[in-house]
Image (cartoon, rainbow, N blue to C red; front, side, top):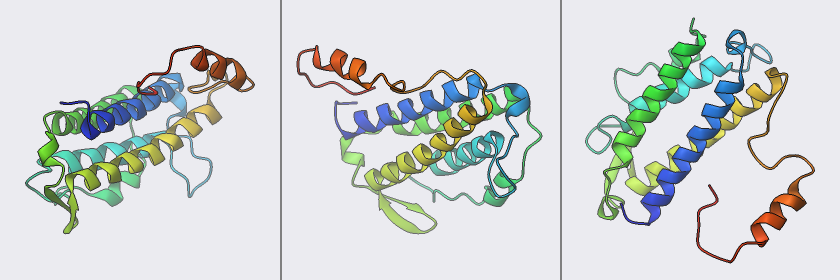
Length: 180
């Protein structure tokens, strides 16, 4: 894969996976079903939805509709009786499916049309749609983990450390590199 849009998209997917990985690992096993209220989602529900979406969207995504007939999206929002190991296994299953679909793509694939619920998207549009969708939900997973973990270690720039962070960045020569 060239250093192109596909390379950048793959790195973004890996970045959001790493944020989710870190949030899930920081969370105690007995807290993965915690909800802020009845209308909110638990970490287990979010992972179930994200992985269900990934398996549906990325399985045979170049040749079949991204909303597979076997997917039951509504059931993804019924709290599963998962333990933390099952949650992690389901999370990984979704990401494995995504990476298996994205990694072999070539630049000429980006303008091909794929369908999600019978709506045509170029491959690039479909990738953008899913980056945004997963970033949205991974942010929710991180928020929940931070809310339910007693000793939180930040996943980004630590509070009151922006000056130090920027000083480190600006001490380096200018260069093209990915922020991850």
